Image (cartoon, rainbow, N blue to C red; front, side, top):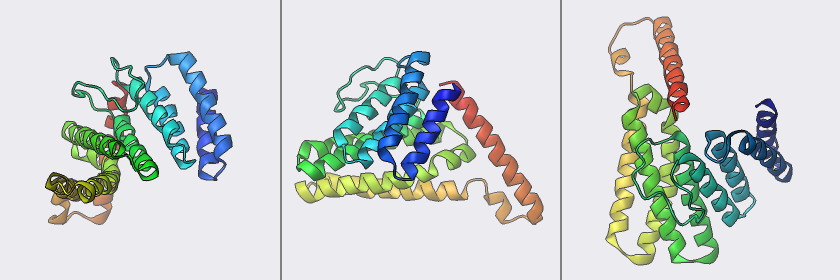
Length: 239
């Protein structure tokens, strides 16, 4: 829908330029249109909720942000309808979605922000649990997609995982002195660094040792990126 998309894009512009109250109005307008068109279980609806969540976190409204992330999770998971941000789907996510990465990472960040404000240990544990699910979703997507697709979609998000999850696990270790969380921090760091390195190197091995002219290398890379982009669109279309 062009009207809802216009609200969403203009909201993004307002958000980037610091006009947060106006951005909020346009995001809500886009959300209402998408809800009328598609109902609650829809990826565009989830996208609106995630943008609202990120905006509320930027405004310092962590509880509101969590509620929006939970609504996004409900929109993405067919048989999940729990509005309590402390809960997540019980079953394993068989079809991990790109947007799910953002939801669980966002919930992890929001619960950590709540912990910093209120010093409630339960919020720190909830942050950790969501980052753990986030790591699982990232790994499943990387395993299900080709290296090019993983490189395009995942590599940037892995840095978020390292920053957010390591912050949470190290805080838990400092508070509890439980070596489990220190081991978790080390494991997350190693997995993250390995995945980032593999994303950077994927598909380049044959070019490193070959005598392919630079122009041909560039053309090959462009084709690979185009194919990966089309595959990503097909993957999302089947969600």
